[in-house]
Length: 252
Length: 271
Image: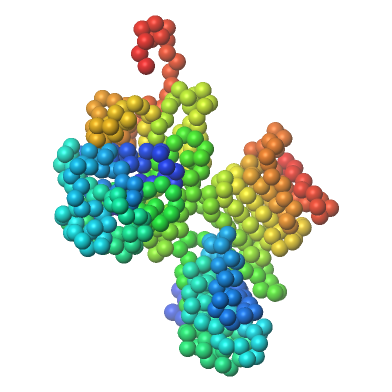
């Protein structure tokens, strides 16, 4: 899935290296019962958290003599929750062999994921128009800002991993916008907004119409059970953190 | 090509079945061959609203499970030519609706030359409601002028945008229509209810119509005659306008403005 398109007519096939970003699924156990229970509880509250991101099974923490997990089942469980595992890494030869049997690729540490993935089609095209979240690798050069141009409705949740998010349509009550960076909403913000989800206290929230149910920065949150100051309610506002512990809401 | 219209809302009691019956009847009265399917397996109501409850022999689940063919289960409507009702089963539960089974029934209806298939969704966001919206080409989201109904409609719109076949396959999205029902211009004007513009501002989908609150609806349900047939009532007129708009015509909104009754009207009564 090329991120940028050449303006000139491009050859049918091009090969380029890329730093490929995905989700690591770190296996600490290979036992069906343990995995099954954990997957169920982990995703119980947030079954739609992922939106088709690619994922890699990290096997480095499994004991050397671990039996192979049921790869096909495991991959299916994750797929049904919006993650698309396509490979294993740091796998023992026995694990790698069973993974290949189940249709997974084996990434070895010498070759970075990029080259392997580039030549393959992405596991699944996104149904939505917007780009899928770009989860950040350890050293993100720059995570592209995620842009949402359709209303976020009650029960919907978007997460911009590793970066900022810009929402051009309303965030309705019951919807949730989450970003590791800052959140910009150029429309009524009536749902929840959680910036700095991984603890970035410098993250901020901006909106042209503040009517949120809850705002949070780096885990410090505020609800709006008591009505907002008239100077702020339904007005453009900025929300930031002072002294790493206090939510400040200011008119823009 | 049959067009599949799902009538949905999230919340219960807002008028989905009343709307399904009137929309299906209205389309049939315009000459389109129309089927209306009750997806509320276990709590079937559509047959009552359509006045065909005494003619139910086979139902939707029988057809899905192959116990009867579609021809045996479809009930011809008494009030409109071109209209057929596929009732829900009263004795099963929603798990009897399989995706494959529903798809086969819809395909078979399309094959039989139906122009429109109206799917009357159950309330909620569980399996039955998902099955009713999975194959939708268009959706009519029925909303009452109160906050909980609006929020549930918002939720169901989100589900349409993620779980419908059109969304999953990345095709052109389901066309969404907002239908505000049980609207009282007086109470909206007095601030006791949301106005239809409030609702539209929140849901941000095109407005198909505003159906006024009326005793005619209860009367219609009790008689088993869809409200659109109650000639001369605002409800019937509002549904008729909505059908016109659905088919691409322009009709000004009616029955949405409240005029304070003048002295004469107050003296001589009249509602």
